[in-house]
Length: 239
Image 1: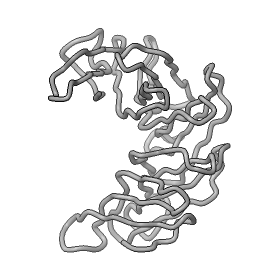
Image 2: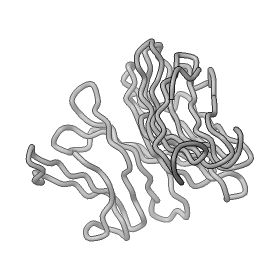
Image 3: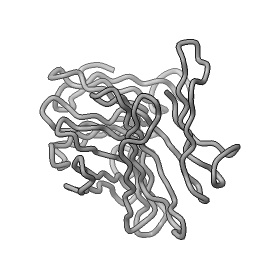
């Protein structure tokens, strides 16, 4: 199953697009979701019950700003659960997970008060859609989120991305560990004077994390692939 957007069909300028493929890559079914404004689906992960959890952004009719958008579908693409997350500024969802308690966490970005840079934004809801907590992390400059946000063995969460608000310069690769309430246990940056950032993170049980991204601060060329192995507290084991 893949998700994205389409301008070729649907109700609006761009609509969320879900396509189910067979083993040879041929389309089996498709779903187009959205209204008259721009609607985008950005990530999809498998849920424990065989369904899928999807994150994106949607601009509701009559609104001048986008909101984070979460969907759960079954293996045929039928919507099981859907929720939007109105906020005090334009926001966009980039990743989502279904937690062990059958709730959901969606993570993305939100424009800062000046409408220029983005902060990290998270919502946790229960199975009925009630908001249990919301968190915002950022600084004076922009933050971005990478793929692979996930629940960890201790019931907390781990994510990665890049930050221009802290670190050694340019943008730095950023990894953050949250507890079950979304409160940061630690947030660490990695990089040098130039641009560095994460593209994906994976938890390795109790053995820490592996992060894949890019670096302009080291390596052989303008921009190189960067892989880091971290322990459970974010200390670099190797890169």
